[in-house]
Length: 114
Length: 107
Image (cartoon, chains in turn cyan, green):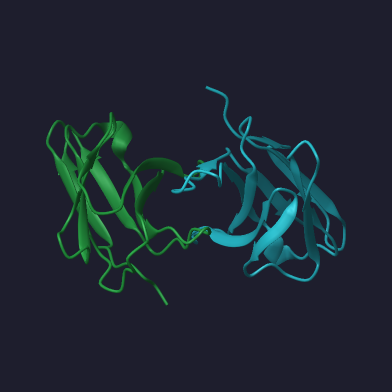
């Protein structure tokens, strides 16, 4: 079965640079979620989109922005990168029309800020 | 504040059943109990979920108490590949990962 695709899988940036992470949800899923997992930490919810509209917002820094496109893929844009942004970034997708809205996660993007 | 409470760690012998408890005493009537696991830096993997009835799938069984204030995830025959951090989460359209239980399956 098709899974959530994230690209790139690894990314190395310098401080103050910009990064763009991409997420391709499972076909027919209409909702995308972004999570950040710092070293030794548990995943933390950043933001979600349902039918291309922001549906919920967590602890996402103002330097980060995201959107969901007409084909339902999503991009997380991160500017003025800081050392503390080094983390795993996971995308998950779900079909919100289902009452239970089960989220399925991608393999993640490992961002390293030098 | 964490909505679920899990033991920080547990060991299990390979081939034996692993029973993972979770307390969620403040659960509301329409909240589902979800279980995910994360195997070292991989994406969290969905295991099972339930509302009030016991559930079983190819990976595990979920037992929810009648008052819904606690639940137990059962891995019937643990293997070394089941070593992971297991998260019990109440789904509220966003998953709030708590500390989870680190399960180590030993040969």
